[in-house]
Image 1 (cartoon, rainbow, N blue to C red):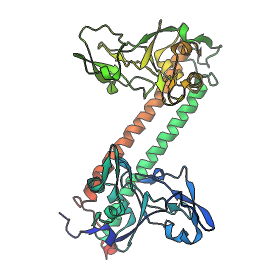
Image 2 (tube, rainbow, N blue to C red; image 1 turned 60 degrees about the vertical axis):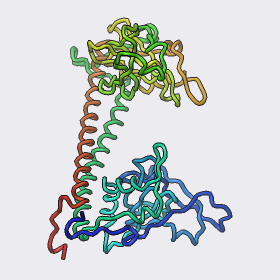
Image 3 (cartoon, rainbow, N blue to C red; image 1 turned 90 degrees about the horizontal axis):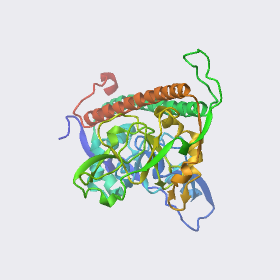
Image 4 (cartoon, rainbow, N blue to C red; image 1 turned 30 degrees about the vertical axis):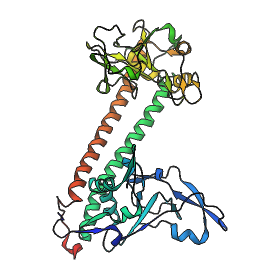
Length: 422
């Protein structure tokens, strides 16, 4: 049901849907090289200009394919979340073209506001429409220009559109500010790790009130403990054939094991398998890139529950906690210097593998336990600051999404200045 005072109009009646330039055309006469936008540049709610490629086009075609301020960019397809997504072009590059997989929708500004239209297309209302008529395959979807043109646009009075767009813009600014704070905090933490984990920056010893002193001890990883295997004799195909569900560690996204991300597999009742414990370190043994091989995660939780390890990883159990503290290990093993030492051990072509024997030979530099503890506490505090910002960002995005659903469908109306409306 259309809200009072609103209309529902097919996009083609209130905007021009423009297709982009195709790559690979031969026999061009006196071509010029011009920047152009690809699907990768058109993100959901922003245009990513980090990497802008160029394309050749004939001079007399430049005006036809050039973007103009206020064009609403919409993607033809890709992953489901990319379908129809886009943003308003603000003339960041002049001239700039768009690929044929990116549509440029040029609204009649007397009827529909560009920012309102972009928000509507990105909302649940827009995404539901695009998915309903999309051509789908495994994890991919696409729409054509006809379906874009038939998009049933909800059209409030223009002043109301602008007011809605203004409100959503305020949320966008808050989200963008938080994203920048997260990026800055992550860069600061990275720089701090580089300084602290190499001894270039020494923290203050709370016992003496002075900076820690003394050389760090050089040890081989293998001298600190021993390895153990994951779910031995099992592959992914075996998971689910047993009789008892057990939690197991599978993904190492974080330097510490995420207890909320444990998966479940089945093993036979009474089956003798290695379980993990506090202080254990886990390494991936295989990856598509050498940079990801040997990525580690540390068990920082004390638990009475039996937890197992994926067979595609292996565990490392320190002999004791008197040389390498778990809280320090989680950062040391993901530090730039150690990661570089591990990645050069990767062997393979299309897929890279890691030898446990070689990994155990890598050298680590360890400060005293007191300094390890201090470094770990500083980096943990940095992590918590980032986590708080990420939680704030998730909350802002959820709040904006809920607000969009209400404002863009007329379930919640905004007050418009009567002078503006007139």
